[in-house]
Length: 177
Image 1: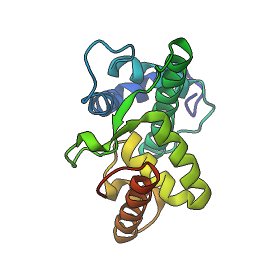
Image 2: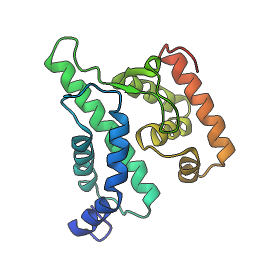
Image 3: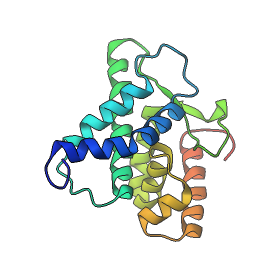
Protein backbone atom coordinates (compact mmCIF):
# COMPACT_ATOMS: atom_id res chain seq x y z
CA UNK A 1 0.00 0.00 0.00
CA UNK A 2 0.98 3.62 -0.02
CA UNK A 3 3.18 5.10 2.67
CA UNK A 4 0.23 6.45 4.69
CA UNK A 5 -1.66 3.19 4.26
CA UNK A 6 -4.51 4.76 2.35
CA UNK A 7 -6.03 3.48 -0.85
CA UNK A 8 -6.39 7.06 -2.04
CA UNK A 9 -2.61 7.59 -1.99
CA UNK A 10 -2.13 4.48 -4.13
CA UNK A 11 -4.85 5.68 -6.50
CA UNK A 12 -3.20 9.08 -6.76
CA UNK A 13 0.10 7.41 -7.58
CA UNK A 14 -1.50 5.36 -10.34
CA UNK A 15 -3.12 8.47 -11.80
CA UNK A 16 0.30 10.13 -12.00
CA UNK A 17 2.02 7.26 -13.81
CA UNK A 18 -0.83 5.49 -15.61
CA UNK A 19 -0.17 7.06 -19.02
CA UNK A 20 3.52 6.16 -18.84
CA UNK A 21 2.77 2.58 -17.80
CA UNK A 22 0.15 2.24 -20.53
CA UNK A 23 2.56 3.61 -23.17
CA UNK A 24 5.16 1.09 -22.05
CA UNK A 25 2.62 -1.75 -22.21
CA UNK A 26 1.52 -0.66 -25.72
CA UNK A 27 5.16 -0.68 -26.81
CA UNK A 28 5.60 -4.21 -25.39
CA UNK A 29 2.61 -5.38 -27.44
CA UNK A 30 3.46 -3.44 -30.63
CA UNK A 31 4.58 -6.56 -32.52
CA UNK A 32 1.66 -8.71 -31.35
CA UNK A 33 -1.17 -9.94 -33.51
CA UNK A 34 -4.47 -8.23 -32.71
CA UNK A 35 -6.93 -10.17 -30.58
CA UNK A 36 -4.47 -11.63 -28.08
CA UNK A 37 -5.82 -12.65 -24.71
CA UNK A 38 -3.72 -10.09 -22.83
CA UNK A 39 -3.89 -6.48 -23.95
CA UNK A 40 -1.86 -3.47 -22.77
CA UNK A 41 -4.65 -2.08 -20.58
CA UNK A 42 -5.12 -5.46 -18.88
CA UNK A 43 -1.36 -5.70 -18.29
CA UNK A 44 -1.28 -2.27 -16.63
CA UNK A 45 -4.34 -3.03 -14.50
CA UNK A 46 -3.06 -6.43 -13.38
CA UNK A 47 0.34 -4.93 -12.53
CA UNK A 48 -1.41 -2.16 -10.59
CA UNK A 49 -3.43 -4.70 -8.59
CA UNK A 50 -0.19 -6.41 -7.64
CA UNK A 51 1.41 -3.09 -6.70
CA UNK A 52 -1.35 -1.93 -4.36
CA UNK A 53 -1.21 -5.24 -2.47
CA UNK A 54 2.40 -4.52 -1.53
CA UNK A 55 3.33 -2.96 1.79
CA UNK A 56 5.79 -0.42 0.37
CA UNK A 57 6.82 2.98 1.65
CA UNK A 58 6.73 4.65 -1.76
CA UNK A 59 9.68 7.00 -1.46
CA UNK A 60 10.26 7.99 -5.07
CA UNK A 61 9.05 7.79 -8.61
CA UNK A 62 12.18 5.79 -9.50
CA UNK A 63 11.38 3.20 -6.83
CA UNK A 64 7.85 2.91 -8.17
CA UNK A 65 9.12 2.17 -11.69
CA UNK A 66 11.55 -0.47 -10.41
CA UNK A 67 8.72 -2.28 -8.66
CA UNK A 68 6.28 -1.68 -11.53
CA UNK A 69 8.75 -3.20 -14.01
CA UNK A 70 8.96 -6.32 -11.87
CA UNK A 71 5.17 -6.48 -11.57
CA UNK A 72 4.71 -6.18 -15.35
CA UNK A 73 7.36 -8.85 -15.92
CA UNK A 74 5.57 -11.11 -13.44
CA UNK A 75 2.19 -10.59 -15.14
CA UNK A 76 3.64 -11.40 -18.57
CA UNK A 77 5.36 -14.55 -17.27
CA UNK A 78 2.24 -15.74 -15.41
CA UNK A 79 0.12 -15.14 -18.51
CA UNK A 80 2.53 -17.03 -20.77
CA UNK A 81 2.70 -19.96 -18.35
CA UNK A 82 -1.07 -20.05 -18.05
CA UNK A 83 -1.49 -20.17 -21.82
CA UNK A 84 1.09 -22.95 -22.00
CA UNK A 85 -0.91 -25.05 -19.57
CA UNK A 86 -4.14 -24.44 -21.44
CA UNK A 87 -3.10 -25.49 -24.89
CA UNK A 88 -0.46 -27.73 -26.36
CA UNK A 89 2.37 -25.64 -27.73
CA UNK A 90 0.76 -22.48 -26.42
CA UNK A 91 1.98 -19.91 -23.99
CA UNK A 92 4.83 -18.48 -25.98
CA UNK A 93 4.08 -14.79 -25.91
CA UNK A 94 6.58 -13.13 -28.19
CA UNK A 95 8.03 -9.80 -27.19
CA UNK A 96 10.82 -7.83 -28.79
CA UNK A 97 14.11 -7.71 -26.91
CA UNK A 98 14.45 -4.02 -27.61
CA UNK A 99 13.80 -0.73 -25.92
CA UNK A 100 11.85 2.27 -27.10
CA UNK A 101 14.71 4.04 -28.88
CA UNK A 102 15.83 0.94 -30.79
CA UNK A 103 14.11 -0.39 -33.89
CA UNK A 104 12.49 -3.78 -33.28
CA UNK A 105 13.64 -6.58 -35.51
CA UNK A 106 11.87 -9.90 -36.05
CA UNK A 107 15.08 -11.75 -35.21
CA UNK A 108 15.00 -10.10 -31.77
CA UNK A 109 11.68 -11.69 -30.86
CA UNK A 110 11.88 -14.44 -28.28
CA UNK A 111 9.33 -15.97 -25.91
CA UNK A 112 8.85 -13.94 -22.74
CA UNK A 113 9.44 -17.10 -20.69
CA UNK A 114 12.87 -17.48 -22.32
CA UNK A 115 13.70 -13.87 -21.49
CA UNK A 116 12.63 -14.43 -17.89
CA UNK A 117 14.75 -17.59 -17.57
CA UNK A 118 17.74 -15.80 -19.09
CA UNK A 119 17.30 -12.86 -16.69
CA UNK A 120 17.20 -15.23 -13.73
CA UNK A 121 20.42 -16.81 -14.96
CA UNK A 122 22.00 -13.39 -15.59
CA UNK A 123 21.05 -12.23 -12.08
CA UNK A 124 23.00 -15.16 -10.66
CA UNK A 125 26.05 -14.04 -12.66
CA UNK A 126 25.64 -10.27 -12.31
CA UNK A 127 22.61 -8.94 -10.49
CA UNK A 128 23.25 -5.30 -11.47
CA UNK A 129 23.20 -6.12 -15.19
CA UNK A 130 20.00 -8.14 -14.76
CA UNK A 131 18.34 -5.26 -12.89
CA UNK A 132 19.47 -2.87 -15.63
CA UNK A 133 17.86 -5.06 -18.30
CA UNK A 134 14.69 -5.33 -16.23
CA UNK A 135 14.48 -1.55 -15.81
CA UNK A 136 15.13 -0.83 -19.46
CA UNK A 137 13.12 -3.68 -21.01
CA UNK A 138 10.20 -4.13 -18.63
CA UNK A 139 10.32 -0.68 -17.02
CA UNK A 140 10.85 1.24 -20.25
CA UNK A 141 13.45 3.49 -18.67
CA UNK A 142 16.26 5.18 -20.55
CA UNK A 143 19.86 4.30 -19.83
CA UNK A 144 20.25 7.54 -17.87
CA UNK A 145 17.13 6.90 -15.77
CA UNK A 146 18.19 3.32 -15.02
CA UNK A 147 21.71 4.48 -14.11
CA UNK A 148 20.23 6.94 -11.62
CA UNK A 149 18.05 4.28 -10.02
CA UNK A 150 20.96 1.83 -9.78
CA UNK A 151 23.33 4.52 -8.49
CA UNK A 152 25.88 4.04 -11.26
CA UNK A 153 27.36 6.38 -13.85
CA UNK A 154 25.88 6.69 -17.34
CA UNK A 155 29.05 5.22 -18.84
CA UNK A 156 28.88 2.22 -16.50
CA UNK A 157 25.21 1.74 -17.40
CA UNK A 158 26.05 1.93 -21.12
CA UNK A 159 28.82 -0.65 -20.75
CA UNK A 160 26.62 -2.92 -18.61
CA UNK A 161 23.81 -2.61 -21.19
CA UNK A 162 26.14 -3.59 -24.06
CA UNK A 163 27.50 -6.52 -22.08
CA UNK A 164 24.08 -7.69 -20.91
CA UNK A 165 22.57 -7.43 -24.41
CA UNK A 166 25.48 -9.39 -25.90
CA UNK A 167 25.14 -12.04 -23.18
CA UNK A 168 21.37 -12.27 -23.71
CA UNK A 169 21.73 -12.48 -27.49
CA UNK A 170 24.22 -15.31 -27.04
CA UNK A 171 22.18 -17.05 -24.33
CA UNK A 172 18.95 -16.81 -26.31
CA UNK A 173 20.59 -17.95 -29.56
CA UNK A 174 19.82 -14.72 -31.38
CA UNK A 175 21.63 -13.29 -34.36
CA UNK A 176 23.42 -9.95 -34.13
CA UNK A 177 24.21 -8.22 -30.93
